[in-house]
Image (tube, rainbow, N blue to C red; front, side):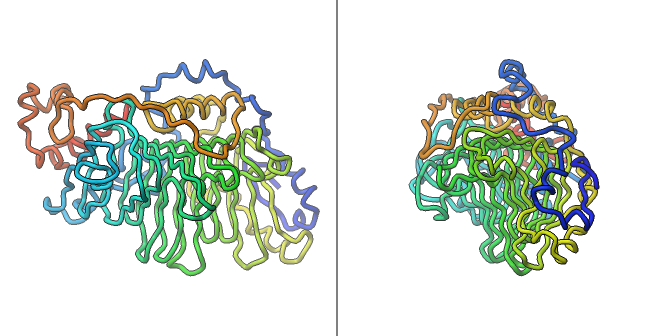
Length: 494
């Protein structure tokens, strides 16, 4: 038997009681910290420059062109608005640039109009502030890049409804979705929902977003008919669902290949004050949960149930006000309800109490047999995480979530550091986001940036560059278009 730096079980272990089983699996890396023990002061963490890039190099991946330079996980090669063009090589399939020029619920220049267009598109924000929606926005046509980093001033926040992704090749970066609407649980009040509607969804990446105040999941990934393949949620804050149904991320497949969810990556996120599901992999889900920070869950933190397969590596769990005594024992819970579907995961280096096998009839023949397959004894995907959890905190906390960081996210980060906060019963106060005028631009690209990068000798010359030139990857560097270069450069957190 190994400890959590490489867990595997032998059949004889399964014959003992769960209480003894829990005791045997002590974490050799880091035990659960008491509230307030983060290993670093708030001052030392927040003094890190918010304009510096998060060090993602410790997560090692190989592949072709990334969605953007810091993309990780199974959806790292999602190309969003450019996917159709890269499939066909036809310049007619290059994306169009759509602008969000106001904070209206609908109409010309609105977010709704941009997200519901039916052709490849890059969404540029030439306005900052809070968009109050009166109903869900459903993204049903593929090939879209939502470039929240382009929003001037304090950035963009969306309130009042769900952003529902029902299609493939989607990149969502640097937006806040703070739903704020209380409804009965499971009534579609996620912050962001990813759900197939008869056709398989592929290649969706959510990066540096802040999602809170939803009365179901902050992010729901639902393998309804068609199934889902290749999703990454990274560098994001999931916080403060409403008490009674306050959850982080749910990935839930169903019986039958067309309903499965394969290759989900939950990497480098901060979960604060949710009852659980940080994340939950339901039936028929495969993926990776790497380098997340979790504070103040309720009765259980992360769950992996029948048919789950994947890696759970170097996550840190820090209890808080709402963490029950039972919840302290259920930071990583491997669940089996007696069906023939057996979870098989690799668990290593997590700062928590030991993983708990729940629902296995102790000492039964079936339990003894299951012991050989409940855990892998090495990573099945070969991902290399940040293994020092104090380094993970200092690396992740200054840069996680949407930027410029608003007062709500600053509070969530502070609560993690100080071991404070609680699960609310309603939405918090929506911060007032600073307004600003979008600089002189060509196709959304600041003309001053085009001059600085050497694409034009003057801003007048920059204004004369054609959009077809700026959006064509043939004219940029490393296979990215000049517009993509600008969007990725804007991601230096303003």
